[in-house]
Image: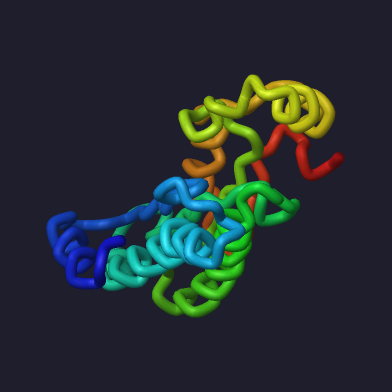
Length: 187
């Protein structure tokens, strides 16, 4: 994981910063079992502590943004923040923590004009899910039975929500998490 000095150096090289999207997402970091305390801690480090450190490191740059929609932080969360994901408890816990961090940062930074929101994708066809998408438990249960739209989402399905949240049309939205899940939470 990056230490704070590495983050400071990376942020310094960015120049102006209007939008930060925290898209950290990894299951079984280093191949570790997330039910093992070390594997659990590794999942928290990648999926919660890393985004928190980066976000805090970017605060000064975001605060001086003059972007039309204002400065924004978008945290990519997950359906596992809402529903159990028994094979990846560290990942699910980290994403639930990221949702709480989203709400807390939104309140903490409101006077700085920085809006902080989350996007919680459902099953999205990305490399992270490719290994599991053809497994019956994913294809039959999670997609066909638990996703009313009956298909995995695409990255393009998620992008529109993130763009909206960064626009002036969303200027009265902060501290919330939008589900982009094909109806997953309705089942």
